[in-house]
Amino acid sequence: MTQATGRAVRHDAMRARNLALVLGEVEARGSLTRAALADITGLTKTTVSKLVADLIEAGLVVEAGTVRDGERGRPGMEVRISGDRVAAIGLEINVDYLSVRVVDLARSVRLRRTQAVDNRAAQPVDVIARLGDLAAKAVDEAVDTGLHVVGGVLAVPGPVDLSTGFVHNAPNLGWREVPVAELLRLPIPVRVENEANLAALGELWFGAGPPDFLYVSGEIGIGAGLVVQGRLFRGARGFAGELGHVAVSPDGPLCRCGARGCLERYAGQDALLTAAAVADLAELISLLEATDSRAMTACERAGWALGVALSSAVNLVDPDTIVLGGIFARLFPWLADTVTGTLAAHLGQMRGAVPPVVVSRLGTEAAALGAAGQVIRQVIADPAAALHP
Image 1 (cartoon, rainbow, N blue to C red):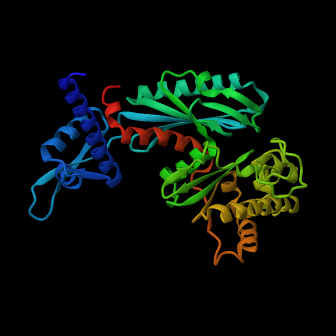
Image 2 (cartoon, helix red, strand yellow):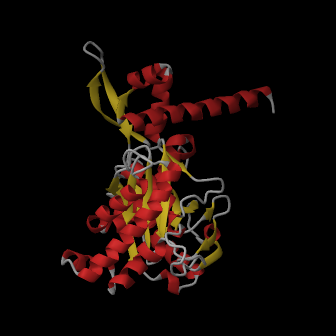
Image 3 (cartoon, one colour):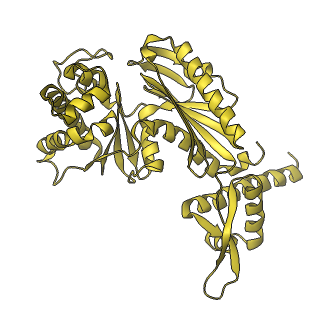
């Protein structure tokens, strides 16, 4: 490398860091003038003006109006994150549906697509192909509105090898050793992540998640995502959060994972519907609203099992708050008292108070939103990569 080349590389690296610094401050604070950005970042006003010009040209920020900096300061033009050009796509494969969300850089959901389908009855390659078709149409629709979809993340209900995109075992789908990332063919880069982890990030970025909480994703399977000081805890290999396979009764029914008495066998969607003898969640909720005794008993049993499993999680990781999502959000009025009562009974001697149990505002779209949010965070952290798509 020549001396001139070395200087150019260092200059490009410094420019990339400064772009990220400026965009990060705008994203964190809502809107700022160039003068305020210079004060906050320590960069010169000339440098900030050049960086902002580049970000405007790339469609990452937009001028938002004139404000006065202080009582005697000259009026300055504020800039804010732009939602007009750059977007991300969040995808989800769950047991009984496929989901697509297109989210712009300002975190507005621009497109929602959900397809109800029993994915247990299909081969992985067919499920992934169907999702690919749904996603490709969504990308085309986004492009028609002037958006540039820079990338995506796919949420799947099972542990994921983040380096390869392999799902080694998703028992509720019946998948083993599936190269999901390799099979999904889209004209944009897409990574694969665990559904519960992404749902926790969705709650953090799009919901009302505090900086420290345990998110519980209730579907046919049950997963959990732990957020600590605003960051996701993944575990040594990225497999943390398999709450659905915590044993609540060692002599309980056999689970798809091969163990007995797992939480999913008491509080998963299939278990709840079977116990209440209903065909779907809407029918279960209708019976609960009518205080049907069988439906109430099924929900109390699920709430007890969830409380038992959560008491172990609380003793282990001490979360500030527990957020219930997925079907648990819809069933919250009938689950909450039993869950909190069971937690109090199991934790009362160990803690002065149990963590509050609250409902997610995102419902079943938390994972897809968290997936899109990961791409948005990547753009904010490295805007230089988005300047010349």
